[in-house]
Length: 351
Image (cartoon, rainbow, N blue to C red; front, side, top):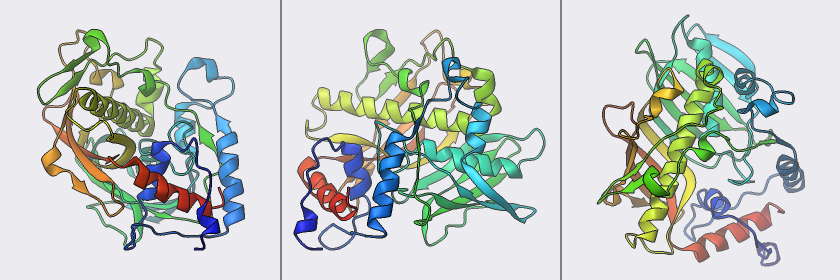
């Protein structure tokens, strides 16, 4: 890469975009750059930013947006039965303005595998939990997705894989492989329910010695029946609420001096383990406020990734869960290094 391609004004670049670009860096300088059909991909990326569909969650959008079930089904295309216990498909993923213009957001990525896994469910069976899911690299294009009944099989080129548990106790594994020939070409507004659930003021939030506790109060106009009907949208919404809670809990740690003020938790999921998905979204809240979503960071389990970002481990417990589960999100304490990496990568992408 020549020096001219390395110079680009990145003012306005969000730290989430920095994380998505930095995550893929692997060589000894901490940077790996890939250039593939630069002009075409840059144009499609610009289209994804401007071609934004409204959030499908609230009734005011019903005249322009399909139902939640239709919304989740649209993310999977060309579904093929590989066997009686396995299916594969192409995807039509979307980006989320405000989170990233360069990769599909973690919770939104749960929609497609859950929609595909639903093709393997028995009548009356539903997705009851995430046993283990890992985001292994930024999902910067649509993916080839495979789902199969049985324990996890990790494809060597997998960018995103995991195991789902059903209400009948069966395991459905899935993995996705990037498809660079199919860039992500549209965006959807942020999940408007998850976006307003977590509050940090007054009695809604209590910061303890090692745990941050959030009261969960869902909006009055939440379309529960539609969300509960669509297992993929139910799963995605709960993961998004968790993401928002972790981000705000981390910000409170910084505010209280527990973490350096230069440190930022990025909305870049690395993994989730043992998250129970209830049959009704209302089960994650406690209107009395006595049972809360609890978040506690485990600094002893955090590690430095290949990109130089810290993989911050935290434990969590929703009101409907009996015990704590675990998740990982990327964090950065060196904004300058992250921006330098983003600067160089975005220059090579012609952005």
